[in-house]
Amino acid sequence: MSLDDFDPLVELAGMWTAEFADRYLPIDGAHPARYEAINGRLVMSPREGSANSWAAKRLAIGLDAAATAAGHALYPALNVIFTPDTWIGPDLVVLRQPVSRMTWVPAEHVLMRSSSSRRRLGAATA
Image (cartoon, rainbow, N blue to C red):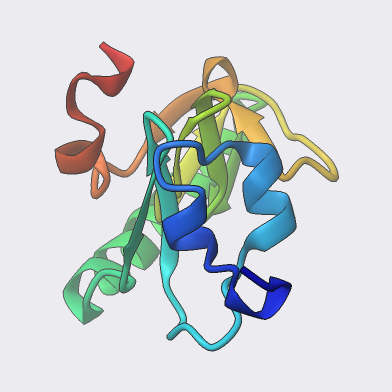
């Protein structure tokens, strides 16, 4: 197998970590997607539809001032990491405090997140 034949979806199946994501994502030639990993299995999905985007925007507008006043920080679309091989990309996240230059936000920093990834996450973080 040559390097040109390397397919990270196939070759790294079940082994996806944040470190691999930093190296191989986004995947060249793939359609724009949300990347998440559950127990080392990469999950690629399109962003949620317009209704979800509209709701996330309205929720962000409503929560931003209160979150900021309480010392929290609201962010759209962060990488929330539970373990090295399990992370999700919620559309809206409220962190206990602001962060800077952080690609992988540990789950313990999260106060609230949108639940669009809950179906896939399931027992992975139970």
